[in-house]
Image (cartoon, rainbow, N blue to C red; front, side, top):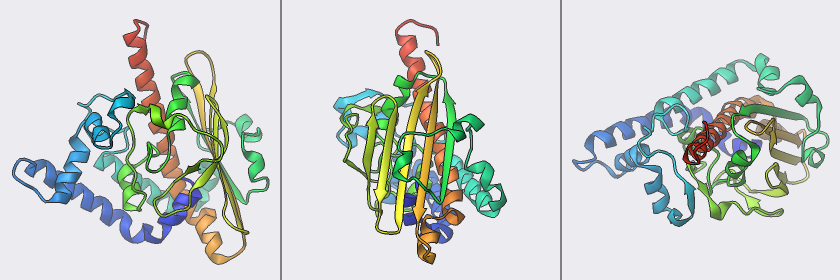
Length: 301
């Protein structure tokens, strides 16, 4: 989660995190039990989100004709990889709470998955924030080629494919996110200068750099005291594996509110849990589709 998203979410984090997740959990369970007997609108909506097929969700949003691949509609919504299950989101809340309680582990968290060599190198977009006050580099290996990972990166954004993270938590925090489980053709053409919303109430960042198949960098010069960037980079290891990176850099002023909103004290614990889940969510989706494509074409999985 980028500091811009986290900053918009921080005011309600402490008071709503556990309450909102439990309310949605209760509504999901109630809606599932009473869907045939006439449940409340909220419970029915929650149950539908949990148990409906991905195709039905995207048809309601008017994107059915451009879906290139769809997840197995029989996948239960408590699946531990898609970011939509109640128990998984409760686990995400616990990760955030643990990170908040362990600031002494921040040095390890801001380099999760990255090697020493990767930490030393430059990444696309680094020049946009040349002197960050804090930054992180998270990385993961994907058992799929870079070209199979890129489409999931290209379509990220609020009111687009989401961020493949803990969906219930994001919506408790006001993001209004729905994670896509399919690649959508209408979201693949991205260009420098386009705005990308990260949170329903936060100002959008702009696409500062797009290298199709390789890198997408968001940038926000949010006034005289705030300069932030968020880079998504995918690089091939060989013909069937790749490395996926999430690189965030923030420079901000000395004011108390600015430091709370963009500094690491509150933002880093939230960012760590959500960003790590995002990378795992992209990995799961890319590997699953890559395996399905290879099976359909008659190759080994």
